[in-house]
Length: 329
Length: 252
Picture 1: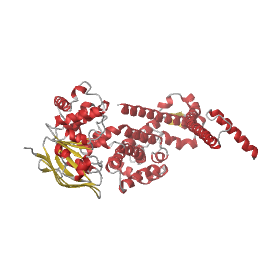
Picture 2: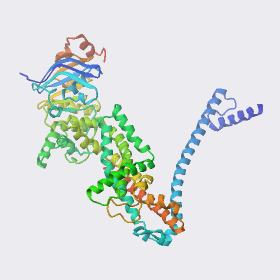
Picture 3: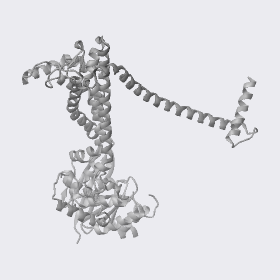
Picture 4: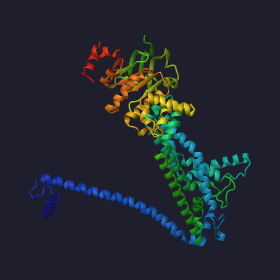
């Protein structure tokens, strides 16, 4: 007990010396205490900094690891099928023919259609909550409801789609005179549109709230109406933020699996119209992963994952480019 | 004989239950510079924002009484028309950051969806910038962003933006409080020029500025209009005790 304190005292003196300020064994206890605390703070700071760096590195390693796994696992299929995998129009695992084109098309079709349907809603909600009614219980309620949309598990959307949406779409298809499948690209896009509204809406709301009131007042003082303020001041000022939100929505739509798998119809042929059934890359993986009994089949599915990964990365990069052009303008 | 252009009759303004401007009656003569001064929170800015109905943009803000512009009650007019006739310049220069100097000047037309031929736009831009003594400084960089200008130039650009709409009255809400002394004196010199064509109402918390630039001064205290008179009379021989105290710096 006594020994340990002596050691501690010794180390303390050493610290004092190394600090070069006190430099004496006879430094008063108070000063030593302070120096000790200082050293402890420096140590904590260093530990904290290292922890942060470590967390960051783990994230990078994870993403690169996932990419590497995808590449390695899809090597058999890349070797066996080559580039024609991408634009092959037939997907027939029984005959060992793997063409990803129908699913690539399905993914892009459903995602962009969903985006087109959801953007007017999410921008409108963002303007309503950000500019017209930022406070009060009705906007709060709306805001929470919209955010809840993002929290609902996607399998529930799938159920709702099958039970409610598909019959409605089917009767609509009967009315306009196309094959009444009900399930298909169109139903999936509708479900996706609902699911991705909150992303663009909540980001849009926060950027719209950040528009300086000085700018809005300047426009009002020149005789602008509220609509003119929105059109000429708020939208130009927030366009990069709004675009970022839309991009976030698109990313979500591209990768969404469960709900889409349940309502898209799961056929591996190229959809003839937006009302026809189809498949997306994610839904094919989810559907066929358990039955992939041949190594090439499994590898082809993983390659599909790789393509999906790359498509998402490319779209994100384009988006970033666009955002930076908006902001530099 | 001077004619009245703006007249407030029993004007009251509120934020919720907070009575900020109390029963103000004031006659503002055409082509004069009127300074509105008083300590912080005395209601001078709220009164100013009442004149072009900017006050009511704030949630919970209400107003009672009349503000007459050429004997027409602005409270009965559509606020858009009011603001086209009564321009406003704010405390901090607020040019639109995404617009060029040129577009900032004609922003009012753009905002209101008015399409003008290029020649007419050029004319408005040149005239407005000349009126605010900015034309010579920026005529070669009209297509640059307005935010590249110095603070004082930006404020003059904002005045040009208001002038371009050809209003009758210009409201200034502490227009120099964010500017350096040199820019301040440039803007103050401008007031003398501008009053030939417009009526200027300037809110200021700077007594020296009120004395320098205005023809008449209104002193607000605790939401009331305490005294309103010729600036010279007000600063040499105030009638009210509270004005006397304020001018001599016994409270600020």
